[in-house]
Length: 127
Image (cartoon, rainbow, N blue to C red; front, top):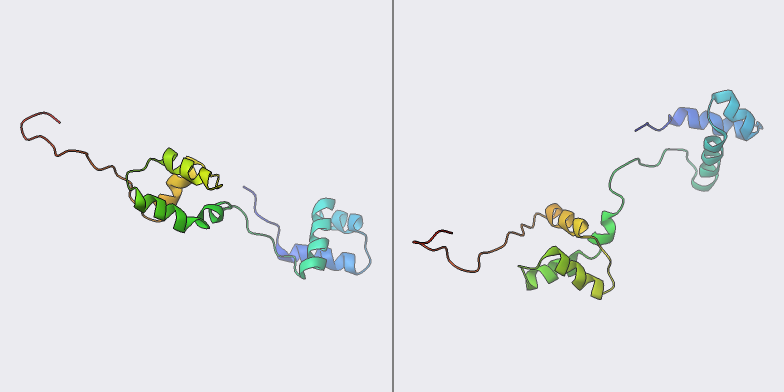
């Protein structure tokens, strides 16, 4: 994955445009694309800086974390619940999540979901 261009370069492009150069000329002068020069200028006008936005990382877990209390309460009410059953229970409440998201949620929160055996192991028979 490529890295973001330096803040110094971004500032030079924005200052060139502010000094009267067109975005086309500034982009050509500094060897960046016109789209980048335009985005940087717009960002400077709207936000007052040209620092790059964060790259990569988790973008969706906040959606499931917002429902953490509900998920944990459903799990505690029925500890043996399967992920697909939990997903269905959440869907009934209008919350659409994937089974893999639920699995990552439990791992993130350190909740072990090991199933408990229904009966004691036999001392004489094979288990």
